[in-house]
Length: 449
Image 1 (tube, rainbow, N blue to C red):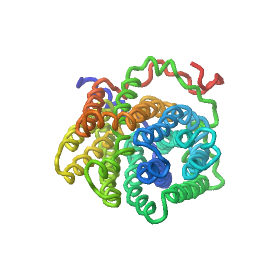
Image 2 (image 1 turned 45 degrees about the vertical axis):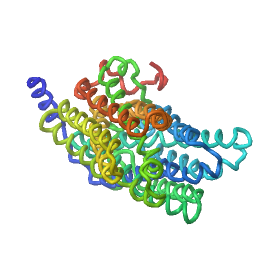
Image 3 (image 1 turned 90 degrees about the vertical axis):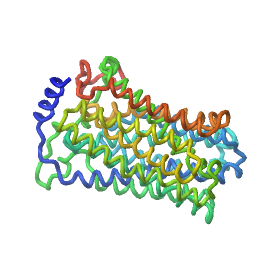
Image 4 (image 1 turned 180 degrees about the vertical axis):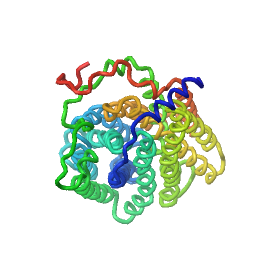
């Protein structure tokens, strides 16, 4: 192992690290803002559900189906979203995605009284609208990874993707208290209208300020080179290479475990505080922000740590140590938080558990770029599809387990799943690359094997 580690460090340091563009901070800042909006648009329904369910006559289980429909649409379109980013570039794809999902965020407010409800019923209309919203948001994170891979050198990508995904923490932290306040004072529909308007405004900013590649920000009169920009060429997804690379599938399986746990926070944590821990609606809106503030701190921190370890110890150990440590410590704190009697200590433990969960995120996403820079968008889409398949199960299964055996047992199941996801890192080797990597530019059909 020590010999392999020495080789990996030599290979890592032998890669050319050109001076990174200072404009990368603008791109990261914009992606951070988009990340905040994506999670405002998906988390607000977990708060408005408190008024939506009685107003629309929905049960907890039916609301779970609505939560899951978003995740199913989000999961199924991860690979196409990543491929689109690889093919057309982050600027165009993310602009269209923002407009798409912002439109369906607004439509969520009127779905129950629209023509869709007369055709599909209230539940069916909400399920369809949230599914379509999930389709649009599916382009977001794979496109982030495409942009980070194009704009940052390899020794900054863990930090870069950790910082941008850290916007999840901000968006999810501010959404419960703000949405609860808006809901109490202006009605639950207003929360959807305001978040949709925010997304449309950000789409305009992204289109006008972002570029696909550092060459796009060259001073006028200089001609950009397209040697490192694949967006102008057809990109074939290397299905055969993915199938033959064990690290790809272990990465997907481990991230599926992370997704199962993460969606408990995104869908049920607010209602857990109200219904199980006995906090008021407004108190829960405040305390439900705690896990996401932890995510905001831990996510970029984990990305920075994995980059530092990768430089010093090689990609294998640098990514593996962070991925394994984050998931195992998340399991410890989530399991403990679910069984503690004190509601305040429970919030503290569960919040730290969420932080450790996202501490590992930079290692996951940077590993997809390590395995294949050319296919960073589509490969990260495959990985994130796994996370959201786990997330599609979690919103419906979690309350069912809780109804049968109680919330402590339901959260203990989540802790065991996180622990398993951590152990899987023992079989992940991001330094190995893809087996028989396909030629990146091909005139074959994009989804042809």
